[in-house]
Image (cartoon, rainbow, N blue to C red; front, side, top):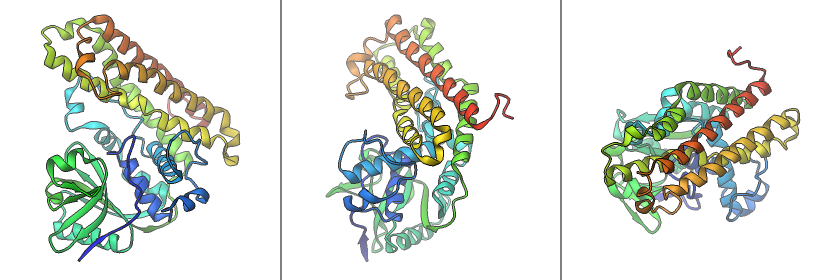
Length: 364
């Protein structure tokens, strides 16, 4: 038998391969937000959307949920190191955060979801049966493919040949385990590439509060600052000796790493928007001054990082010509200066969160 759930919001746009984007699709389905009419009156986890995201009501709603759960998951708070190629070779921000704590458990706790979870050691039949049960209950599932942490929304199955149907960014799927047909991803090789499958099974009381989210933000920001990946990256770009013997191919690889790296502070807008909206919620009026300051710092991170992002061609996906500028020290240092602005802004966010939550720098 074959079954595909209709009208599941596609996790497109910014961060389409990330957990928060795909989780937003599952969250919306679980909360019964499947049409524009439903999106008009439905509640949002982080308050009313600012409207900065473009598209129809359903697309704006999806972006709003995605942005809030980007904060809850902590994915935009982690740092990568430009000097460490392993950070860009099947590692990525998902794994950095997974090594920090269990971000999926934390996210599900805030959402109030019961769930099943299978890693790559799980039996294929058991995973497929759970996916099938979820689809039959009209709930999409989440699957993580490859070592680079590419997340997808599973919207269907065919138990005749063990095929699954999904939505998400097509890049890893089509190159490794399936095809795209009529806008839907199709794979009968998903199990061979599965890193993890997560299936929502029901609702329960939330075990994670907003205060828990803020305290975890403090912990992650503090840990990342002490790890110093951003500062190490800025220092690396300023050290001309590091680039002796670099040829065009190596500079092209550097441009790719810089573009990936800068995607993190560019995505700070995903933090600034919902934090700004949370400041307008009555329950948070006593914290509004802090939340507005935090949102402003993240908006600034996004604005300045866009400049450096464009310097390596990431905005248009054309990096060959910009990469030719990287041999020039002043060009690299300009990008390093942007990174150091982001570092200062992140530290101001950390100080603001500590003040808001009554946490001193020693962690007490």
